[in-house]
Amino acid sequence: MKLSQMPSLRIVSNRFSDLFRITVLSMAILLGAAITGNAQNITATMTGTVTDASGSVVPGAQVSLSNELSGDERKTVTNSAGYYTFAAVPAGSFTLTVEATGFQRTVRKGIVVNSSERVTADLSLQIGSTTQTLEVSAAASSIDTLTNGERTNVLDTATLQNITTVGRSAAELIKLMPGFAQTGNGVTNYPGYDGSAMGINGNGNAGRQSAVGYFAASGTPTSSMEVVSDGAHVTDPGCNCATPVNPNPEMIQEARVLQNAFSADNAKGPVVVSTITKAGGSTFHGEGYVSVRNPVLNANDWLNNRSGLQRAENKYVFPGFNIGGPILVPKTGFNRNRNKAFFFAGFEYFYQHLTSAPVNATVPTARMLQGDFSRDSIAQINPSLTTPGAPTTAGNPQPVTSAQYPGGIIPVSEFDKGGVALTKLFPAPNANPLTNTGFNYVLQVTFPQNGWQQVERVDYSISDSTKLFVRYYHQQEVQNFPIQLWGQGSNQVPYPSPVVGRNHSESVAGDLTHVFSPSLTNEFVMAYTYIGFPNTFQNPQAVRSGALTRSRQATTWSGTPISNRAAAPRTAPSPNRRPIRPASATFTPIC
Image (tube, rainbow, N blue to C red; front, side, top):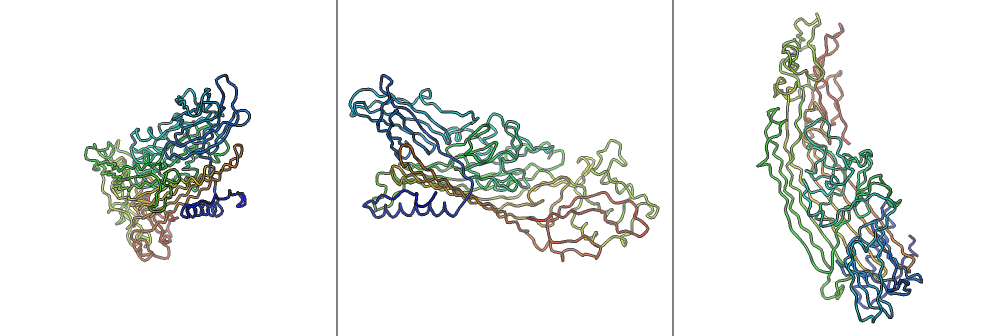
């Protein structure tokens, strides 16, 4: 939209009001000029026809639409066909009022409008004086929602707050929608995503933290889902797994899921989950709350019992509050009628003690580290060699049987120094492979992941024909990776040093609407989203090259996170005495 097309400001007598109006408009213009991005339509359209008792159309009728929460009002007139339209209507509950000469004033209350809908509300006027008022109930049967064949499901404010969820993310509610199926659970004893943990990053050592990438809708791939907040796309495009904005049910007034045949103003898809942040009204409202989950009454997990692990000590405490109302500036008279400017603000803290899924791995034994790769020694990590019916260890490691090393004993003097240094990174065995499905190492880690989120929204009725809202969202957390960066692989042992991610995200969304005439409305939508994952080692010294003794033949150690996987010892080397590495190490770069 060109700056020359912006509507001119009406000069008012109150200087503060004038200054506030200019400042808000200037910020909207500058932000819109500086920030580019794909934003989708989040407002609705209301249309209708005004007729008299005989069914004849009533042209020139004065039609006003009032937001029942804020009292904000928009006006228009019916055309020669008795038709009226309100474009760019925000989600909410409205009162429609129609006045025409020779007819009673007609009021219809409680018209619920959801985002991206096209609502038709026809009114029939009765003959009488405009001083008389006829109230009409907005029954569902008298309000039509036009459809273009799209498949959409909507959760309103009451539904969002009355449905019990496992965690605090509103994205968890999509599992209630028809056609959605959870995928990607694999063979672990934990779901791919259950909503327990709140986090910006989609992956962590305690499992999935984002619904994106783990739900399939109507048979579409899991990568097909997009999350939108107030028109801003808030899905990490790098992996389609992280969500910079994770609003909880107390912060949003609507969650809308578009699954099929929706309009072109939704740039992503084929499945879009769209949320709308709550807005303030003409009176002050607020709440304080705390959500607590404690493991005291939990039973131990079956897999933990089998592996000899204690009960997971997951703890979740989420205190928060929100408040909304009119913006009042003392001694200025600004917004004295409480129908011009409004705010909503929410905050929630995350106190989370998370527990990883059980880690099972095969690590070198003390006898192997001393060069003993005999049948009895290897049987300690692969009991199927000597015990009939015992589980076979992954890779089915075998003893050294070469005549060069009688009895499978390899002199320590022939070990590569670099290989010896790498084996020191493996933990000692702590489990019996006979009772732990073939693994001699098992671990489950409980670790903190605390953070907080905040949201602010401002709505400003610049005039009857110009409306503005701006929403800002911020979330940050300290995410610990005691085992492995981001995910948690099978046959995995912890890094030499835990990785700490100080994640944060920002999201700004805005909407500026101006009505030029009953048949011409301009809506300017802007959005900006940022997500950052700066990862560092908790103990940098543990991963420096100086921490390992290297030889010229050793595998290069570059100071990056290490992902260790035990491998079967090699059989007898060639006569040139090729170095023996009892275990292998895979190096994973940090991004």
